[in-house]
Image (cartoon, rainbow, N blue to C red; front, side, top):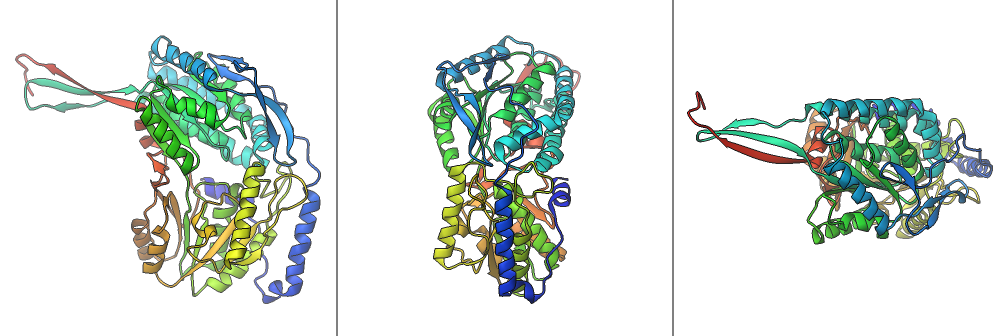
Length: 534
């Protein structure tokens, strides 16, 4: 669903594959196009939304941080301040955890019927749809992603995920099983308690839904920390949750920084479970803090360096478009981006030329403008990191086919960048760049590409482009990753589990599998006297 809708929204016709495109005149046209785009990003459109909520949401009320501190959230289009947001720290996390604990131990949420919980979640999904454009505008303003992507793809997916888990709420149950003696044996599936959740900046609302949805369906209460780069949309969504009838204290939202608020959640002795999405390095810290405190349960959705494999039987035009989408979607800021494009040697040269042409056609600009495919990167830190990797690629000997520099003089825009002649040991082929940088590698046969694709510390996802069913089946089983997309990419429906192998994380999100993250299983054995049957 997601890939089909996004592809139809963002795809553009291919440039001519004739050799004249790649002549000096064609290269000059590319430079002229970047010049035109640079001029276009200098003037920003006024967002069609007002910021109304900047405080912490604790115990059902919007409150200032105990310290009184605030921090600025910035517009990535120009680096200007959007709003000052309350800066939560350990003391505020203590308040939020206390509210969540009270709501769990004394409040109505875990004690109401599962059907009543589901009705609240369904009402919440209805409110999301009612406020679709407002939510989408905040998401784009704070994050930089195209407004059409936010409004037509991500906010509808937010509602879809909550409806999915609303449907699960009254279908969570234990089992009965036969014992070896005169006993009645059953299991209870119980909410785990207070869940701490830490979400990233690249998909703030979708990651919120992947975590809040199953936690609430199972009857838990939550303390959620937003990314410091993108705190605004979650606060509006928190308000809508309470409008839907969510009891006070069930969901508490703390804006703040990882080293303070995030660490306080991960190490808190009264948090029963922590879920984190972000970098692998920070994931290690979360795991360590959880183990050193109360050994709380942990799920981690971490980094990736996903292979996208174009086989020799591929329709090159289709493969180029799908590989382009797999890498450049969301400004390349996707943990599962197809960031290692492996192309069979038979079609490699043609693929590189057409990938370059597609990158040069990519429409970059103010994300509130209609038809924009790529907005700015989220902040200056990410912007500078990407440019540093581009420099590494050039210095390591990869061929820069397109892009390679910033776009415009303000904001965090980067030219869509394509490298060919990339080797496996180059940093641009091993590290998670998290930006609009496509690296294209050549392979000879399936044995080789399987070994090279698996030679990574990550194992989040992979893409396979082939017309051969046997090839598809071989690759889907050989690739050590959590998701394999065959002739598609980024299909992220609510029912499909998502997570990784190796250093890409622990556990799965979405689908039925995510419910296990928020449940305890209790065995109950009762002695029977003179049972009629066993």
